[in-house]
Length: 294
Image 1 (cartoon, one colour):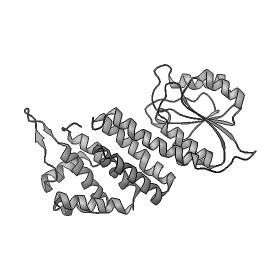
Image 2 (cartoon, rainbow, N blue to C red):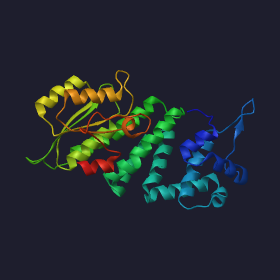
Image 3 (cartoon, helix red, strand yellow):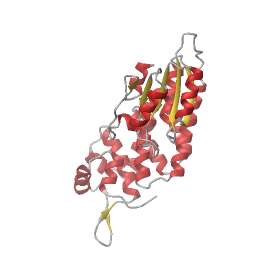
Image 4 (tube, rainbow, N blue to C red):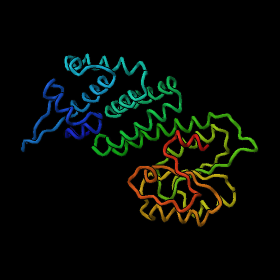
C-alpha cells in the first residue's frame, strides 16, 4: 500500500470535498500532512483511514467540532458502534473499504453476511456491494490495493451471487420468457450480469447464462437453437477489437428478430456516444429499471 496521498485522493475516497478537508485541517487539526523534500504536501495511510472514519461519523450527524475532540481510540469505538448497528447501507460501504485496506478478508465476509441478514440480498447488492465496487476502482487507481486483492474480493462476492441464484426454487412455467444472458467477446466484468441473472430467475424466467467473452458468431448460433425471447448484456469496458456502435449494428444484422436489453458503463456512463441501430435495443439505466423490464 502506498503511503503518500494528495488531498484530491482523500476527497475521492472519503467523498468530502478538498476545500472542506483543508478547512477541517486548519481549524480542527483533523489531518496531519507531511511534506516532501520539495515542500509538496502529502497524507499518509493513517490520515487516509482517519478521514474515512471522520466522514462516516460526520455523515451520521456528528459535528466536526465534536469529532475533532475524540482520541483515535474514541473515534474507532464510535465508528464501530455505528457500523455494528447496520442502520444504513451506505455506512457498510465504508466498513468494507476499511476491511479491504487492512486486508481483513474474514471481517469482510462477516460484514457481507450480516448485511444480507439485515438488509436482504437485493439491497445488499445494490446499495452496498455495487457502490463498494466503485470505491474499489478508486482504491485500485490509487495503488491502495493490487489486482490480486481485487480479484480475491470480486470472487468472494461472485460466489455469494452464485449461491443466491442456486437458492432460488421458483420453477419457470411453460409461459415463462426465455432470457439469454451473455457478455461480448473480451468483456470479463461479470458481476452485473450475474446479478441480472439472479433478478431474472427470481421472477420466474427461464434463463440461459453464457457468461463472459462470448463471440458474436457463437451467440448467433445459440440463439437459432434456443430461440430466446430476450437477450441481456452489459458493456463495461471498451473492446480492443470493435467499436460498440459497430458491434450493436452487427448484432442487429446477425440476430434481427430478438430484442436486446443492454446496460453498463459504455452504454449509460456518458463517456461514450451511443447510437442504437434500431428499436430492437432497450437500455436500462440501473437494476431498479431492469426489474421493470423483467
